[in-house]
Length: 169
Length: 292
Image 1 (cartoon, rainbow over the protein chains, first blue to last red):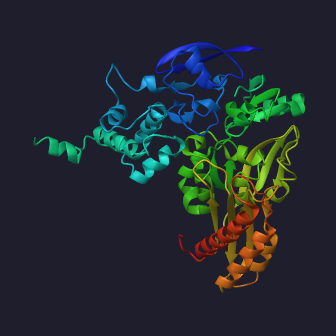
Image 2: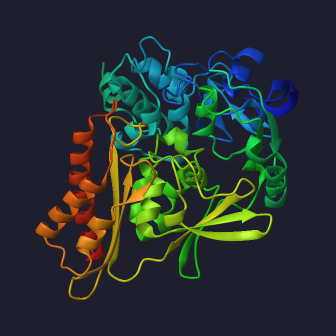
Image 3: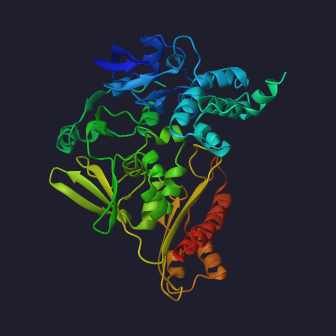
């Protein structure tokens, strides 16, 4: 069993870890680095609970080896909030009740954050397509879509219709 | 879900890749996107002793028109095909194919070269490349070798690549005037393999007579295959509703699906008939200049 040294940055922090070639990236993130926000769901590349950003792109960290992260920049769900302030997507999941059991939520939010970074105003269809590699067994997706739409409005500072109504209370 | 142990090396050039393949023979396996290989390794269906990661080889991710062909670097991600306006507008069949592979997260890693080299009859690109009459470029110790796609899938889960060759490029003939293609896949859910899918590419003359037709089938044959009787029935004729119905029945007859959790053989064969009809119709409409 040969260990390799792997260097990458994760959530902005440079790390150097020892990894066996066959170690999956998700296990390195959770077990070696203790960042357990990234979940292991199906382990078969289907569910997306393990979604992280690899050089800004959402990928399934259960379907990469840790050694493949050499020289890369990774972001996990722990890297979304800045200085204790939730990012718009996290806030959206909070405000719109975008989760029930919460298991898929980290992956959903990583995918949603990447989507909103590349598409300014995604349609509902585009949102649903973007999260089609992230499975949720609780919500029926309706509130997840609403949460992402909330984040989109927040990021582009367009007041939500509800927000306008609430303003009159 | 822990893969068996292996030795891992990142190759930084094609020469290095070929050298490693030559040295380690059938013990070695190329890792490109890893979206088929890593799941197979986790299930221990694949236990390569030596992994050559070609993600370190630069210059293999491109989509460009050159010498009357669309040339696609083997490491081009499916997501890049999906985003390419050249592919979307010039090769809608290829856009339709990339867009239905696995899911968007997988498509950020998955490569077109891997999809073909894996030689899985359930993969989507093989049927489309068969319909398009593509050529595969293999790089080995003696340089490049061109392999017609019709010869690329010799047997079950095997490609025509030699153990010391690496797939570097896919070449697709630029569409001739009045040609059109379509890929239609039927899947149970996003991310699944096709229950069945059909790729069609047709060329018409000025009188609407079909002068060329190629039809590829996904996941209903042991190796990625064409429906040659269906193709032959179209060539030389105007493509009427009746001609489409006849060709679709022939395509269904040529398919050889197996009953499994995705459906019975009878159901899948009839699905081939329905999908072939739709794909021929869409391809003909595109050949006539329609966008759909």
